[in-house]
Length: 222
Image (cartoon, rainbow, N blue to C red; front, side):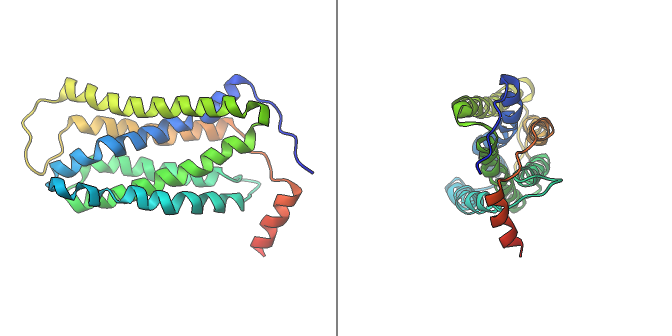
């Protein structure tokens, strides 16, 4: 029998979507700040496309794999989707914190791969989490709220780089050294990546799988 999902209030939908702010802030930094770091660390400009191959590769592999895996997961203690996007957010947070301290180019490239795995690991189960929770009549509102936080996260990431460069930039740049003003955006991203996901996790309980879904999950466990 199909479970009837209860309608949620505006603020419940708000709380369950706020984690997209941190995830997209992290994606925003990945899109706009990683290449400058590569250049500061001595990467030739013509190498940038190959250094950024982590994005399409991990997106192609990690999102569908983790999404399918979370479909077949349930724990009375940890839930269904939450373990995946919590681990992804933790990976992203630690990587963002470490990024400005990259001593050499290939260290930064390795961090990019880890960051992209974390971001994609968080994203796909989190999208499914929204669909799991909301009844059909509230799906439009849920995905509109998701889009709001997605846009806000990217806007904040890009805006923080411009702001901190304006406030703290202007120093002479030495080859192989990442400028100090760039650190602040990554530190904010490290905080938001984990804090916003934790907010959604703590404020939003998951709905247990239906009997049919539990039968499928138990088959896999056996």
